[in-house]
Length: 626
Image 1 (cartoon, rainbow, N blue to C red):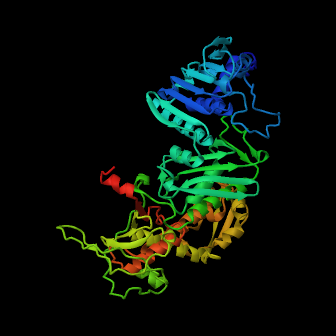
Image 2: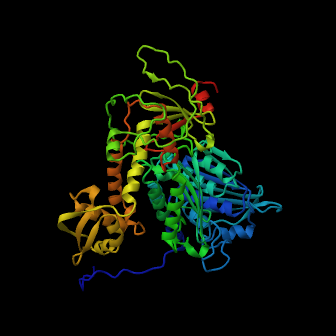
Image 3: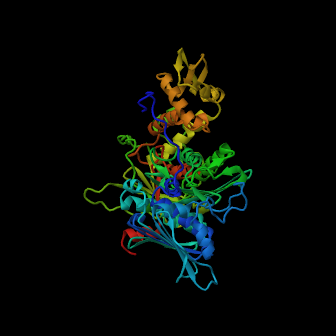
């Protein structure tokens, strides 16, 4: 502060040195070792490499080495490669038709500004390789050296030149985990390239050139294509392809979601939200789906120059992209049970979910002749837990096995007498023919390929009932219940206008609102299923979620859709056949056939599996025969 005037001293503006500028820029591009690794592997893929080998020490903090057999660089190329904003990947200066993973010309200079960088490269057919080194932003002169065709990049002492950044790095184990995920995403974007990843002395994977299905299975570790569903969709110029695991395969984080746009791995909120919406009715709350999706977009409809890391995008038509992903995943997941096998090895550890309600065994059902038909399930039928048996194709029951009574053993329901009819086409009945019921809860069946199928009768019928109820309530307009006294709800600035802009769609869902001046909204009716206890809380939650995801339709908003779905799930749970109830052969057969044709029947209303499949190999493994 100036003593004479009492005013603060005027700060002096000065030009920063090039070295400081490079270190500041490096902090934007290279956030952690995995970010540096990403840039190096992208360069290797862009060079036309057919094999890329990666070695990390201490999660990349101490050392990163990337070796490829790509086109290589001349000495003049090496000098330019370590200068800022020098690149061979832009055909023009419009930044519109970007067809390579890298294009900004910042990776190597940023790494060299924060660490010790060494690049050895040799074009195919050249007499020798050349080396250039960068240490803390100081570039050395290129020099000849020994080296094979391609490029070898070594990064050591990450962030030694920026100690503040190095201090905030996580442990070597955590950094190695981020690097592992980064390499997996890039390996999936280039299945034609062989990848080898080594962490310290351990080889994580060594993958040959593969087709996309095999690469997805290897990268996502889904044990082959057994648990994967193909995903395909086209909407105008947008093309979506890939694979999605069934809802029984899920993880605690979104690390199992690999999303590609024009071959570029991205972490995009539009795509991730679309995946979440597509799985919202079939997966446990708090769990994340496992998918590998590739979206092809015309280059002029997407902007990849949003962030130095190039993992964020801006779509010209985000709503179309979102709709395509939700629709394609919905079709893939909409098949009945049996489309994709669910084997015990695929089931993941689960977070604590809603508690299962235990029901005492129902009174034994009166004997009925084989083929007896129950009435269609109206409210009374649902309350009684009866199955809709309609006309169903008969299934051959295997030769009955006489159960052996053992002390303390649970009784096994012996199958009824063998029916001479057989399944006309096992392909049409993937859950196979029922054999028996055990513990009054589980149905045993044998599929057409000889595999053993186990069905949780309560969980399965819960999903069937849930889908039937949901179809009834969402077929047209949900019944609304008018509030005795309309409630005025004051919303944060801007939220009232957002909610009122969706008033027409909300009305079709049973929520009737109208403007009340300023930031207030008048609520006149709510869905009858929800009752009228908390209109203000519901509207505020919906407004918050609409503001967070401005592309979401009201029926996708968790505040409304989640509450409705939770009530339908509870109704379905109470209206489903209960554990402990003995089923006839006809009832078991009807349950399997309904599961095969009901969408999302692979999981119950709480996201847990309704059936498991044990192949011959699975059984041999369980019994130690292989």
